[in-house]
Length: 82
Image 1 (tube, rainbow, N blue to C red):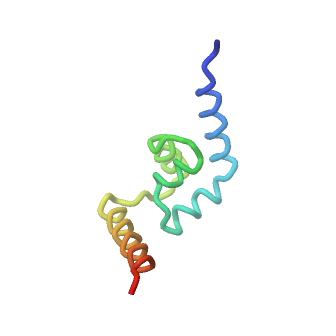
Image 2 (cartoon, rainbow, N blue to C red):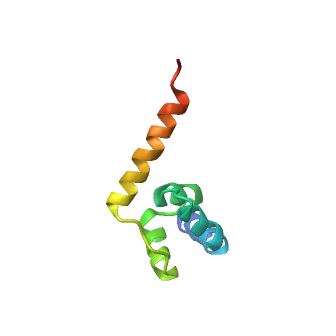
């Protein structure tokens, strides 16, 4: 029985390529690369390479962590009960 995962992964990659502008905008709007990769069902490493191919400037680890802390603080504030 053939393994379906490579076909599914290929289809997921095609969706990313078809939605290139949306994918780039989501990243520019401060969504994490990992979150976008999960949403499309592709590997982080593949999406990173795709961004490099497209010429999208990648965040440094420090920039990514600063955004993560900022978003985490916002999430905590919105769920805090007084």
